[in-house]
Image (cartoon, rainbow, N blue to C red; front, top):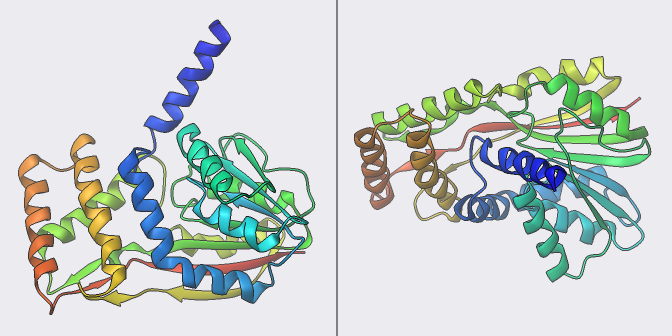
Length: 282
């Protein structure tokens, strides 16, 4: 009984200290985020050659949106190892794969800063918006490199210039909101612009960068991708207030400015730029 209690405390802490939260609203937002960027993601996977029979690690798998897509691509002769610290997210990932009839996924609850990612021999790893939040990107990359076979590929989507999170025309409260988002990540040991450091860290881990592509979009309220900032702002105003980074009045002003932008067909939003980085283990 004491051992079970200790484990529940660990699990509760793992879920509660996520800077963006693990509640139902965040689960839904991550699903929307995956749908917005899914064409970019799947084009990348196809370009590098992920196919039937591959063994792939989903690093920081979250609720398993990418996990399920990867499992379908590698098929029953391949496999996916989904590693995630949040028990709540892993439960959602298991259910997602169950509903899609996927039996080639192994789920592992682990802290990426404390556990290895698996035995060497994986063909590829997928890591999206994870390195921005960990306390040691160098350790994360070392763990990834150690799990890949020689010639295996590490694929990252990580932010490189979060300050491109901008609305046009400029809206002061939304500018402050973006700054507080970055500050909240840094306060927990993360780095929103971590992609700038990845090429050097990959080289130190014995990997060679073979491709880097910037990914950024500018969208209007009529575009489906507009729903990405819409959901992020609504949820994270509340989160920043919980963290004491926005007052009630400041949060209300952020939401007021966004509603004004949403109602103006001449508004535009530029997404925070991230880099698609592909590296090969030597």
